[in-house]
Amino acid sequence: MTLKVAVLTGAGISAESGVPTFRGQGGLWKSFRPEELATPEAFRKDPAIVWEWYLWRRSLIAKAEPNEGHLGLVELESMLGDNFLLITQNVDGLHQKAGSKRLVELHGNIWKVRCLSCGAVYEDRRVQSKELPPRCKECGGLIRPDVVWFGEPLPIEALEKAVSWASSCSIFVSVGTSALVYPAAELPYIAKRSGAKVVEINPEETPVSEIGDVIIREPASKGIRKLLRML
Ligand code: OAD
Image (cartoon, rainbow, N blue to C red; front, top):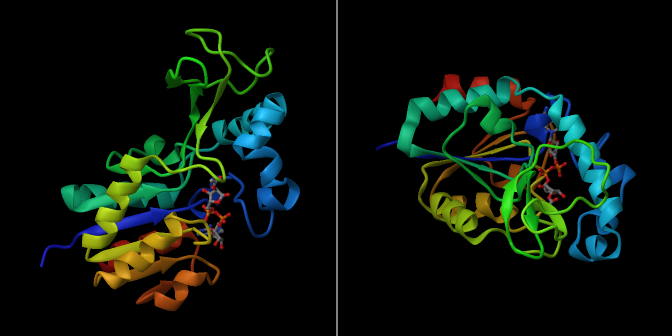
C-alpha cells in the first residue's frame, strides 16, 4: 500500500521559533481578546487598532526562522512527493520559508492583504506603517490582513482539498494544534472515520489524543524527527 500522509499544523510548530501560540502558557488569547482583534466586527469598529496588532505580530514573525519541525516536514515532503500534503492553520509563512511547497493555508497569510474596495490581494511585508489603517496600493481603499477571522468562512478551495486529503490519506498527523477551532479541528476525525491512522505530536493532551493511534508527547522539533524515523 502506498503511504499517503496529510499533516495538519497549528501554532505549536512555530512556538520553538519564538512565535507565540494562541492558547496555553504565554498564548495571545491570554493577553488579548479575540473579539476585539480578530473578527470582522472589530475591524469595522476600529481598523487602526486591529492593524496595530497585526503589525506587531508581523514584527515578531519577521524575526523568526523555521525550526527543526518545519524543516522535518520539508524532508517528509521530499520523501513522499505527491503523496504528501501539509495543511496549516498558521498564517506566519514559516512553512514556505522552510521550503514546503505542497501546502494549503486554511486561515490565510499574515503577509498578504486584501482591499475591501477593489478586491485586490497582494503581498505586503510592512511591519510598521505611518498611515493607520494602511490603504490599498491600487485604489486607495481600506485594506485588511488576508487572514480568516472568527465568524468568517475558510477559503473554500483550501478547505475542500484538506477534507479530501483527510478522507483519503493512510496517515493523518496533527502537530502543535489545540484542535479546538473548527472546521480544522474536524479533519483528524474525518481521517479516523475514513480509516487513516492518526498521529498526534503535542507536548499536551488535546481532543485528538482520544482518537490517536500514535501519540508523541514531544515538542514539534523532536516529535517530527521521531515520526521520520518511524516511517
Ligand atoms: P493554539 O494556540 O490553540 O494551540 C497550540 C498548541 O500547540 C497547544 O495544543 C500546545 O500544547 C501546542 N504546543 C505548544 N508548544 C509546542 C511545541 N513546541 N511543539 C508542538 N506543540 C506545541 O493554536 P492553534 O491550534 O493553531 O485562528 O489555534 C487554532 C486557531 O485558533 C488559530 O489558527 C487561530 C486561533 O485563534 C484564527 O485566528 C482564526
